[in-house]
Amino acid sequence: MKFNDELTLLLKARYPVIFINTIEEDRVEYVIRKHIKTSLNRSIYSWDFVDGYTNNPNNEGFAKRNPLQALELVERLTSETPAIFLLKDFNRFLADISISRKLKNISRMLKLQPKSIIIIGSDFNIPKELQDLITVIQFQLPVEGEISQELTRLINSLNINVNADLFESLTQACQGLSLERIRRVLSKIIATHKTIDENSISILLSEKKQIISQTEILEYWSVNEKITNIGGVENLKDWLKKRKSSFSLQAANYGLPTPRGLLLVGIQGTGKSLTAKAIASEWQLPLLKLDVGKLFGGIVGESESRLRQMIEVSETLAPCILWIDEIDKAFSINESKGDSGTSNRVLATFISWLSEKTKPVFVVATANNIDLLPLEIIRKGRFDEIFFLDLPQTQERAQIFQIHIEEFRPNTWESFDYEKLAQLSEAFSGAEIKQSIVEAMYHAFYEQREFTTEDICFALNELIPLAQLESTQTIKLQNWASSGRIRLASSNSIYI
Image (cartoon, rainbow, N blue to C red):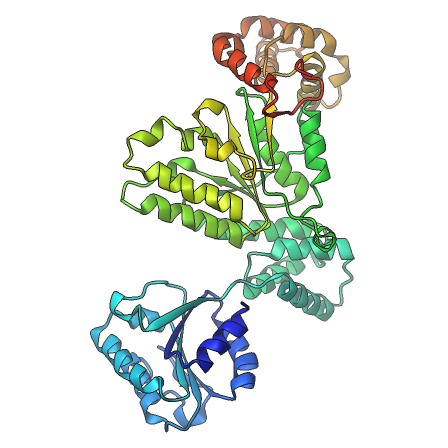
């Protein structure tokens, strides 16, 4: 039910006290004055602690710095006067016994008269003795249509031409921001660039970072990785390429559901975390990383509360990418036995959200050990797809060498023998290949010369890949992937 319809219904049903939970105080008051007053034809009295009652000349400044007196005005008005009393931040005074008692006394009268008290605040904390009296409704942040309308108004007022694709990208980037914040950040964009263009997207995304910084559970990651920076994994790249525009308005009009998420399983160093960063960069969506260590708190019920906070923040900033690194350590079967059921409760809430979420939050989870993951997570329906990232094959290793060397030496990368390097790096992961190049650079820099193919070959002979140190675990993962229960990320895998 829409906010206007829900609030109108409650007022018609003579609910005495309504609490609207929101940070957009001005927007709530605007909506109430525009829609509710018109449909119900009630007078509106607005009060705050500093200025008292405003917008009504007969009561201007009444009950200034006196919340108890603010309730007395409700009694003063005749029973035939339809009225709505907007009390801003009044929830902060509910713990006062005189305020709570007064509200209880007034509520009996309000049930018989066309009057209602609406409390506007952002601190959701109602004393137990008033919970049965106060009805809570949520006032959501502006939806896509409201954002589009506001952007159109602002762009027209600035007399700037914005093409349809950029306008849609701006609308997406603004989701999760209040209208006031959108106005401020667009003013910042105009002051910085004198216009609105592709650079505006990054400024809007950085504004969302301010919201993320207010929580200790999620971390905002600024990324500039590209899919082309990942060597191999052609099946995975193709899958991601087909879903790049799935958050667009055209996709919604087509009836296409937004993708839910991706689980990346594989050997350490094969590019799982890099893929999460590349997705956010390619899709131009904010990347939120869940700090699993901070998710679980020591106080009973704290972990569940933090998970709900994580869900609320990520959905507020949707569309976005939610990156959960090493999810096998967060919801390990072994770890859940001695924590009084906390992990099981958190897991139940998490997988329920994965299955039922309607907001465009694309979850990218990575795991090194599939054996530690509960079956509920890897069951179909939680994620759109589960990919296995194996150790790179010969052609993929050559490609990875080229990507990294081209990054380090953009002018001389063609002089290296990539075929030779690929042959010598059997069982090396992508991360270990990069480390071998770094080792070669250290060696050459010490001798005050440019590094060559031979320096990298020397480093490869010195390094021992993890796959050799943990060969049993590696073989076990590869055999599990070859069973056909998981999709392979590489098109030239040895299992195909």
